[in-house]
Length: 506
Ligand code: SF4
Image 1 (cartoon, rainbow, N blue to C red):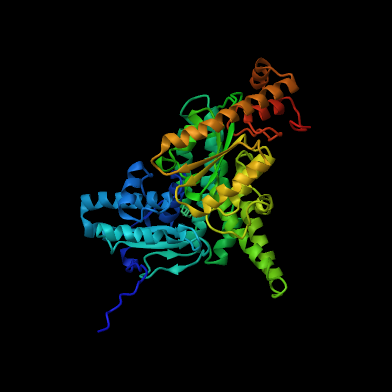
Image 2: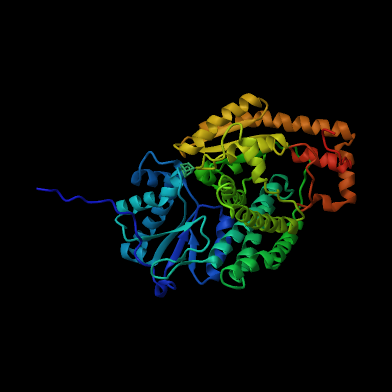
């Protein structure tokens, strides 16, 4: 007798209807609290109830491990556990059915060799384990700005939503740059965090009140052309003008790279390593989400270039992508300009590819691809940072390949200070002590840079204080110290004050 076969069926969310929109809250997460607050403003602007999940905690790792494949990468375990713990608390407070009815979860999706393409499978497995199979998950594909209405019409992933999220991310990146450029040097402890909070709240309102113009191309044209967001950023800049800094403190600049979620995250998921580095006396160079979006935008060009001989329209398509890319980078630069160009510029995607190419091929997709190698070499060759701290998730295939390639890079560039930190979520002491070893070397480097800059310029701390007394704008967080060939801020500051325009190694 033939046995009945139960075929695998992929997850399908039950409909989220238009009528439910007023009473259902859309949950989301995965970025920093600043980005998430602005995204919340975008959702509110489109009349959705939305709220970010609580920030990741160590307890989320344990909850995730209990319910999904234990071989999963640590970001998958953390983020699944985060959703699980939130839903558990809701079930305890309001019961299963109310939790299923009152919330849906919106998460980014993709395809490719890494688990990012299968996050929703882990969520589904966890929901099944919790007896919440009917809870609804929706995917926001990273490469489709206009996905239309999800079944039921309660959620519409259209241009207004997607563009709002992208613009919120760009503004969130600028705020994050300002935060990490300022806090290590703030004169009044806590002032940076206070202004940051006020800035995020102000921008939340800007996104909540965003005017809705056009449909598809019309909405796109409005976002690129409007002064609405740049004006708001100029207003925020005035808040930062009030923060006083002391840039004569010598701190090694530490660039954070690594897997997307781990490098972006600020909390237990990466041992709060950015705050920890600051406490250890470093200045952190945070990774903007905008670089990842720039990568997604640029990579089709490389695929199209291979078809040039077969398809005559390829040239036109490439030109269109490049034009779109210029608008994208131009928008980011408008926001930087609103802050006096203090936030960092975005690296050129072609340069990242070329730097990485001898070590990691750009067609190897998955995770951050070749960018991990490219970013480390970019920081090293342009003297943008004294050291690179790379956050690698435990059990991540793409990242393991990059770390392997970095061994070759280090062989070629032995003085590149590189700290690859494997993050498991529960081995903090090992990870941080490993980072500390490289940080000690980076501190020596930043000290030597400072000593060299002082000797070269003949300035003394007293003379510098006199200059600052005459030019109080120098002590503002929004004063731009140009990059004059040193990695650390203090050395560049000294050179700048001496009026040396030729750079440290001229
Ligand atoms: S890049 Fe690695 S850590 Fe990130 S989702 Fe993919 S497999 Fe997991």
